[in-house]
Image (tube, rainbow, N blue to C red; front, side, top):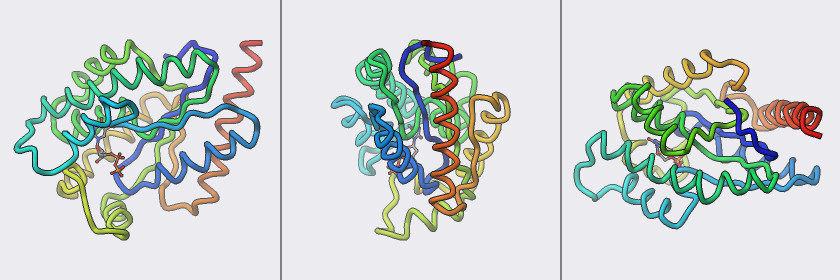
Length: 218
Ligand code: TYD
């Protein structure tokens, strides 16, 4: 499944504390230096309604949120993001980098919350009209390393981050299974590699994809 659009759609995925935002920023800078128009965005969020949904689902203090409600809030945020932001940018020929996409719901709600990965996938394919990334960069992080890295700054964790390590281990396994099921669609890298090494490997893969696309679509 590809976007079939002139632009290129790259998703960054991985457990909390994997360093996705750092790598998305590095890639955006490197691609912009090469003259490409890059749109950097994130989930949940990316639109005004999505940012409201983000605070509903991540902030503590909204009372109990059951697993199905949680999955639907993430999917609603994603529907707006795909329709209002990602698809239009791809149609304009831009390179879209998103910090998290459908795989996050499949891993966190499907596996982590035990709603079933297939049910969550089909909900999200419906929500996005089957808009799939051309490449997913998976930064694989051990849950205890991830917790150490993300609490190093302020020590604060959101609703999902504060779940037990066992929850995060199920998520890690789900991400790795997704990548193993479609290896050509993924670049899997250990999150613990030096930042520059990760950035170089990600850039090389994206430039190769861009070149292949330019050969196919003159
Ligand atoms: P993220 O924005 O990566 O965290 P932060 O910016 O605070 O580092 O993601 C927020 C949390 O939401 C993260 O724990 C993963 C979770 N999440 C889901 O459970 N399902 C989803 O579909 C998405 C997009 C995120």
